[in-house]
Structures are given as structure tokens and as C-alpha cells.
Image 1: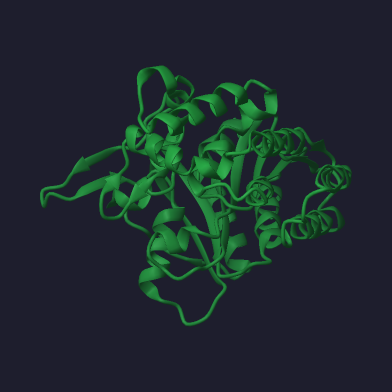
Image 2: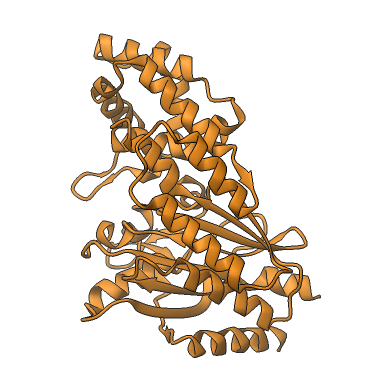
Length: 357
């Protein structure tokens, strides 16, 4: 009964904010999840072959399914606002089935604040106090690497290992030497791929070709080595990692973070409007949400799902994560649609219920 009441409260808030509620199938073609979920979630999928011989998966999250439906519907105007609720299925130690409720705004570039404020209103509608909001930004990390013209595979590899770079445990010298040795030999052997194997294992699921299927670890290493000419200057490689480490260690209140970020990147070309967009969103939050919501910006924070390209965020209460989301401007195109920006979030209903017990 309590769960139903909470879902009704959340649903009414979504409707008030002009989100159209949609249904998505529990069973989907596996390909829409394998393309961009990331290694952590990919290891939790319930996948099987259906009687028609198709590779299918129990829905582990809603965003990819919502995007597939958006592409099929071909809406004539955007932004399009969708809401949803229902079960998701993941193999993990906390239980195999959970309930999510959330929203997606597809087609809007300046809708980060709208999505985050919607999440805030829902939590306040459930009478939560002392809400903590953590914000990161994948786009800023990626834009730093763009300045050095790295290959897409290498950029994704480094961003996915940002925690090691942040902590200083990323062995940049071994990585560089092994890549350089591999390029010189034009071959792969067990002696020069120890670091690569360990790093690439974390991001294997991100490399999918529609024609050939998921690449093998061997193929990924080959591709990296073939593009190693991007990094024939060790100085530029070390400089890029130093910038990543400096930026990923910036955290604190929103205004201090923006000031620190601009100082760290002062000697690099400003990454288009990425910093300005984040600053605008943070100012909107500071000016409009209640003061009892604690906002922390952590530029080394990354979420487990790999399709995020911009702002990412997580709401927690008493140390429990209850809601998370972010911007994913490439996912529509990856799944076969036109280039379309998008952002969304989902509540973890079971975590919310546990806090209310």
C-alpha cells in the first residue's frame, strides 16, 4: 500500500510537470543494452535466446527502452517529455527485481535544471528532509581529452578509469611504455599487455560494431596500438593525465568548484560551453531550491552507466542513494536515431521504502 502511495505521489508530480507516461516492454532486444550500459551493469543482465532465436534481455533500466520508443515514434517536435515506472531486473546481491520511476527529456540542450528540480520536487513530495545532491560532469573530463586529440577508444578508457587517475594509482608510465612497445612491435604478447588487459577489462562492453558484434579484448588492444600515433609525444600524454587528475580532485560547494576549475584549465582552450552550462545549472539550483538540500560538486564522480556525456547526479538520504541520472546526448544516435540531446533520472523505489520503514 505504501509503495503504491509513493508511486502515485511521484506520478502526479511528473504529470503536473507535463511528462507523458509511457510503457516499455519488460523483454527487449539485447543489443540496445549492450551498446552503452558499461561493464558494471552489463555483468548484471538477465539475457537469453527467445523461441524465435533472438537474443533478448530482461529490462535492467528504462532509459534505453524509452529512447528506442522515441526513435520509433518519430515525434515531430522536441523536447519530448516522458515518464515511466515499473520493475527492472539485475543480478546482484541485493535482490534481482527492483522498481524504478523516472523521467527523460529528449531533445532539449538546456534542460538539466528542469530534470534535477523535478527529482527534488518528488523527494520533497515524499516528505524527505536533509537531502544530499552530488553532481559531476563527464563532459568536462571528455573535453580535456579533446584538447589532445586522443582517439575515442582511448578517451573512454581514461574516463572509465578516472577513479584510479584521481587517486594517483593509475600507472601512467607503464601504460605509456607498454603501448609504445606494442606499437613498435606491431604485435601483442603477454609481456606488454598486463596493464592494458586490466584497464580494458573494465570497459570491454563499450566497443560494439553493428556489423561485427562486440569486439574482443585482443581487437581493442590492437585498435589502441594502431592509433597510438596520437600519443607519440609522451609529454602531451602526461600533461593530459595531470589535467585529468587535477580536475577530478576538485570538489566542494558549487561556486568554489567553478572557480577552481577555471584556474586549473586556464592554460587550455575553454571546452566550448561546457563549463558555462554547468555554472548556469548550478546557479539555478542555488537560487531556486531549498537551503536544506546540500549540494556537493565532485568532478571526479562518475556513474556506472557508460552512456552519460554531460552532467551526472545522485541524490542520497542518510547515506542511501535514492535517485540518480544525467545527460546522454549520444544515446539516441547510437541506437539508430538522429543526433538528439537528452537527460533524465530514475528513483530507486525500494531504497526509498527502506528509509521510510
